[in-house]
Length: 216
Image (cartoon, rainbow, N blue to C red):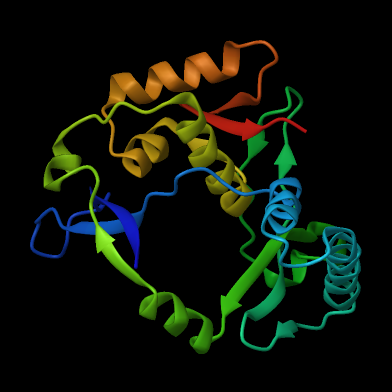
């Protein structure tokens, strides 16, 4: 049975009684992309990879087609895709993001709205199947919340890419909490990733906070 790897992390806000509470989150090990998936199929002789590649292309096109027409897209036994929209990000003259707050709903027009992402809600049967085929293990031990784990570059990149794909930006604090590392380690990783050549990420200052983004 496969083992789920997870870490224990403190919640950023204390509860109503002023206590620090904890949560658990999955700790992924790498990511399989489409090329690796097709190679996996070829290696195990399970399906024709050429046919599968064409099928994936059709599926992606169809998801886009349905979402842009304001439909949800459900695959039985897997889950439902739905478009996410929000307010467009406004920038100042220096290219820094602005926090725009509307107090009158009538001020919001179609020009202020854009697609911000896609949500996925898994079918109950899909989640149940994962539960049946997995058990849990914590590779970092219970001390994760008070220690700064040493990460490899790809582990940090994988976490940041997943976080940015979902939320669009990340701060030093969010990286520190997400990985369960101390301030110094989070700052060192961000400086390294922003200044390496070629840089994968860039940053902008919002008030007193540096905000990090994925380069196009």
